[in-house]
Amino acid sequence: MTVSDTKTFLLNLVELCVTVFRGPDADTWSKMADSGLPELLDRVQGIPGFPAAPVRGLAKALSDCRRTGGFSPLETEYVRLFIACPGGVPAPLYQSCHQDTQPRTMGQSALDMQSRLDEAGLEISLPSNEPPDHLTIELEYLFFLLSEEWFRDASRAGRGIDFASTVMLPWVRRFRNAVAAADPHPVFLHTADIAVVMLEALVKT
Image (cartoon, rainbow, N blue to C red; front, side, top):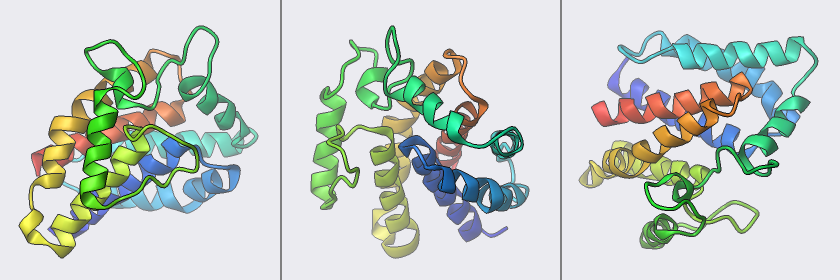
């Protein structure tokens, strides 16, 4: 597999994580199970040194969902893990909630992220009024940076990798551990694992 193929694969993983952590509907889950994950699983075999286990685990977890009755339980689990849960949300989708400081939404990381978006001329695409340090917003910003420097403007080289290593990887590791501690459905744990290994792979490029 060429360097370009590897970069495209990593961008596809970014898109996968955006889709899962935005909360797909049943039709999107079905498409991921039928074509998206089998294709990624086939391609990951050709990426030297990339851990295939999380991709393989997610593919199996979605296949098991289809076999045991469908994807509707994933909607309930998404709400429990990330949106609302008695006793507190186990794994909020915001960087501000996974810092060394007191967890809260609209913290400094949200203000910093808004500045990055403003500088790049980007607007938040989520339909609700989400803080800008939402995981999927940061992932989409990462996708933008990597696409720019890899395929359009070499003078921007290093910006995406720097954002992945200094901003995203530390808190996404904490987020992944919070998901794991909440007895999650395997779909969400494997996707959190994919987010971590994808960021780690970017840091090594």
